[in-house]
Length: 104
Image (cartoon, rainbow, N blue to C red; front, side):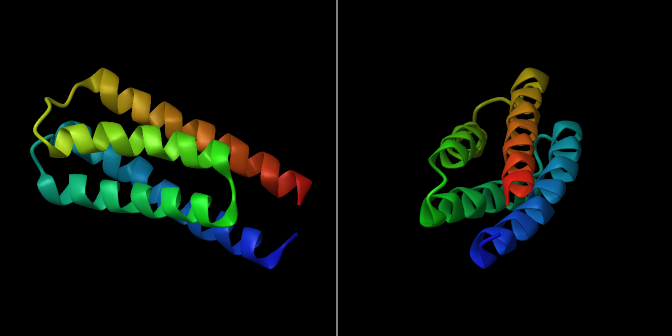
């Protein structure tokens, strides 16, 4: 497996594990701007890295999650369904990453 891809998969896996935990906390504390900022930063980092190494499918998924988080940041109400949708998107990203690991 390409060293850059291997490093991406490792670091992104760690970021996404943190995002999972933080999203659960955020759902319980929807007005916690520190949690929201951390989630947004991590998802933004993953999106940018996907774009850099040429993974458009992953970039599109992370962009979708980032867009919803951006709406929360801009004052939109946090709903359980929106947080669930983000968690499902993160799961899809993890599935694609697992496929990349298997193909590696």
